[in-house]
Image 1 (cartoon, rainbow, N blue to C red):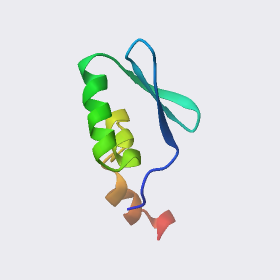
Image 2: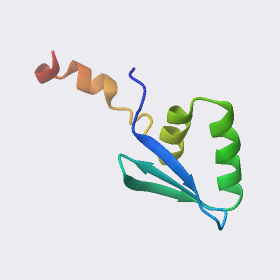
Image 3: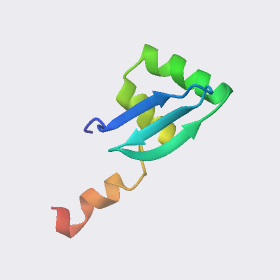
Length: 72
């Protein structure tokens, strides 16, 4: 499975974290969720962490798409 790319994040002065994907806002985290995210992104692969937190990680349709006649 290819690694997700194109994610970035910005810490705001009010403590919120804005996660963007290809220069478009994907999600905003505030409070405890923002703190958990920052701790996790510093300790692991940042791109995978941001993909998981935004929900763009696995959609469950990868196997069905691979079996479709158009993709053979």
